[in-house]
Length: 328
Ligand code: AVI
Image (tube, rainbow, N blue to C red):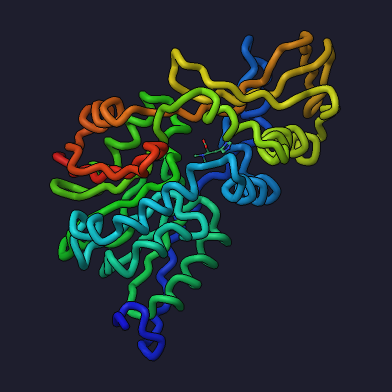
């Protein structure tokens, strides 16, 4: 048994660093997004309590291959990844959520300090405490922050090598220029020779991609439509959700899945006292999920100040996990 998971070892209390990230200003974002000539809402707005539950359900769907494929890659190659990242590291996880994927790697990685970063305070505290209880030897510093905006690590630590973990292909939900900027900030946090382990969904045939975002059980449709329910609940919105439908397709030119909510008729909708007109067939663009080739992602990583070191994929080449080393 490793000292990290020895149940008789002392459980370190977690340190909680709250940067009080500003909650999304739902009203301002929705009014601005719906007033655009091409209506657009940020995918960040999906994740209220209901949306987070629906996203967890998406991860279990037979059509949604990214989650289970990435976990299989982490299980298969965890020991090699650990060699790359080095033992006794200070390991930062971006958007840690329930910290499920890091559990697969912790025994192999044996970090000295684990630093999950997440915007949702209650969820972060709960999952950090649960993780500290399973791995009693581990020092856990939970950081409540919005990782998509600049932030500094809360502890001065130059003793341990630095590493970061960014799973789930969440990088794909950023426009490539924003993804590059985010990676540049991660490189700066890591410092020279820091390692980033990052999950990236790969380009593949249209049919497989489109099935993953149009599941037969309609969970992704419910996840998308929840945004209108959320606006109705929180902003006194007047969306009749029977007059919209979920649409998801692969835009090959931009190498991304686009999700939209399509108005099935000409209509007017009131939200927070403002009125918005919809043509029949007009959409609200709600999400982009960019897909990369391995070379395409390496080029992006290099522009952001990283050097690709190793990449692991599954036998069908559906998904990739990269180890990048920072030059800055
Ligand atoms: C969180 N993110 C990586 C998911 C994706 O695949 O882009 C969000 C999602 N949207 C629909 N299904 C899943």
